[in-house]
Image 1 (spheres, rainbow, N blue to C red):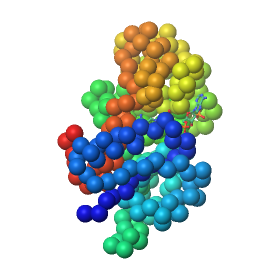
Image 2: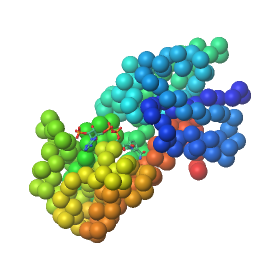
Image 3: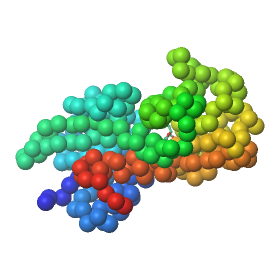
Image 4: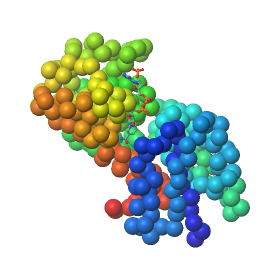
Length: 251
Ligand code: NAP
């Protein structure tokens, strides 16, 4: 079997954990494959990359999770539902010509597996943010039967509330998810009525670096349970590998 090529596209990629994760996985599994991060200044650079490097799979990160869809020939049902992908499965013929590019979203399963079974159907979740990650979380929670309200600085939809309305909904909510980038810089904290949190709440930050964000630190002060984004990160990466290798791994 010839060497397989995988990688990550996005901009910037300085913070990315994927290259180390996949390189270690390939060594552990004895897989002859390479994984390379590619910083693209524009998604328009993707066709040239796919011609230059015989990639079999790509992870896609910010800011291209939506824009990348125009290069996919097939979208999974989840990608169709939320309009964002973080994994491309690239199929080539024996001469290397691309036959099919299928777009997947493994953030959904990565998040869902970390909270499956924790909440009753019909429970209320508040999800901060309205980007691709928030849509993946919303989709995952809805498939588990939770009711979801997104929280936005500029709410536009019926299922979306403003930050000033959080005070009204937080007492009945069981889950509060930070799906914004606020907290990657540890001096920034989302302004919320943290004093309303109790031991009945789970506060989940999709950010994994720093491991305790200001959002999680505030939640801990008021006795809420907390989870950071590390388990989701591993889950979405393993699901990407399952798609690429088309075999489930017991790691
Ligand atoms: P994004 O598109 O850059 O932003 C998401 C949303 O956050 C925006 O749509 C915006 O919603 C809100 N937002 C942005 N800046 C804000 C600010 N200064 N104050 C308040 N709200 C702000 O990000 P994303 O791709 O959805 O990712 C969100 C976070 O999840 C990132 O930190 C990312 O690293 C993390 N993530 C983690 C994993 C994992 O595996 N752990 C996977 C995916 C993403 P409004 O304009 O509506 O307020």
